[in-house]
Length: 350
Image (cartoon, rainbow, N blue to C red; front, side, top):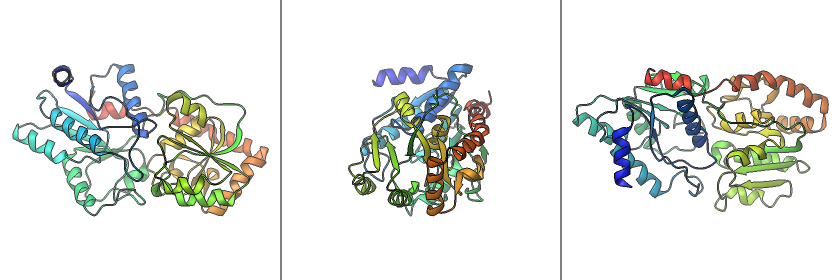
């Protein structure tokens, strides 16, 4: 394995996308596949390096990585620093522990590598899951080490500290995925997020309790045995769990539902909702965070009671449902233009 990896280092381009460990059914998988699609379609002179194989998501509740994934990430980062041909590196995630070590090695080598990243959240983003006391200081360091940070929305850019790195707005790519829209839908409400605090799990539980006669479908990419919200919800007869699906099977599942519901307290783009909308679901979303930027007022709510009333109206009023479907068409057409090619060409100057 070591010889093969070093051979790959000798033959890769001067333009690199660095891939951290990533998991099935996550937005990182969509992002990486979207970049692969752009590179292949337009024959871009860019190589991928790092954790090139998607992993099964087995990390514990409230955490995204196990120790072995962190160790793999750091080893790959140091290995990457050994290639003297590299001139530009795009990191999939701004959250980059160990970046100072990489900078230290390349400084000793006398090299000046252009570094950029995609930003998905941070301690400065209201409602973010990670809020350790040391994180703010680490983020300032990473900001100084990155030449540019890409964000997917005006909302995401508005959360950045004033002294942050140079940033640009490019919506994340999504048109590499194939979506099938069903003419007939089940009268079900899809919850496409992680069952965690930053995705408004407590608000979701309240809505489930307020609507005992409506069926909610929760999709999740990993086992939820350690999740406290799962144990609250699995006792309820109006909640169905579909766990571990990904790829075409996952897209087929989300396409069956009439409504996609978000209660997110932190959202800078909204991959899960966008995928559901492109699968024909009617979105019902908080009137905050990134959502007003991409969705009309008729798809937004300001309180749990308003969300409850809108859900009931969408499910039981066919004329209102058709009205929303018509309002959704320009939004769908906008999403269908999103791909990673402009971002990649901007960073790598190609």
